[in-house]
Length: 217
Figure 1 (spheres, rainbow, N blue to C red):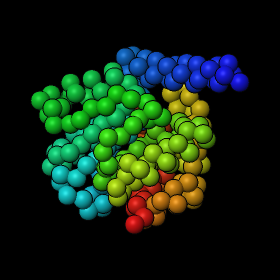
Figure 2 (tube, helix red, strand yellow; figure 1 turned 60 degrees about the horizontal axis):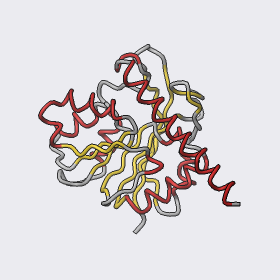
Figure 3 (spheres, one colour; figure 1 turned 180 degrees about the horizontal axis):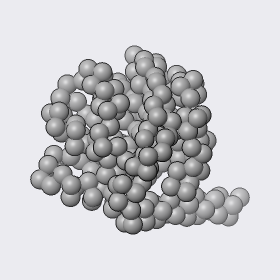
Figure 4 (cartoon, rainbow, N blue to C red; figure 1 turned 180 degrees about the vertical axis):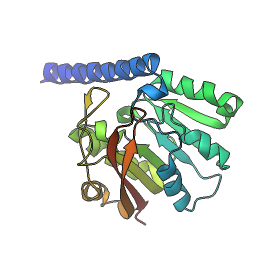
């Protein structure tokens, strides 16, 4: 039994290391205009964060933020307590370099979301396109994680049922608003949801579903 458990543990650790290597390779070899998820301005994410009615010093974390431009616009709009988490150190370094001196105003965390242990609660937890990479087992752990780590607002965007089946060569799980609500309804109430055709740098369309949840009191 112990041997089987150790074998399972080593298998999981090996898979996690392979995922990290994958994303490090992506960010080392591709520019923002060579990856599908790039947004010049993340309008929908910014709108949902604004609709959260939080103060400028509220704690915001961007899960899988990588070198996304969201942090740039949040700083521009005066938010002062921003954390960016990504599995890829290369992606974070690119974002820091782009921001220059402003990078010191941001907390940077290099971590796989499946092993992330928050040390604080967040007023806004924003995740655009990490969640759909998780396995069924990992989504269960994720729901438990956000229940503990999110104080008020949970914003998630994933590929919809009309979206791609793969991203960056990796298989994903498609969702609709009803699916996401079912996963999070025990601790959160769905306040807003909508669908968006994201236009990639290659001028193709990817359909996303966005959901804004409020923590149940």
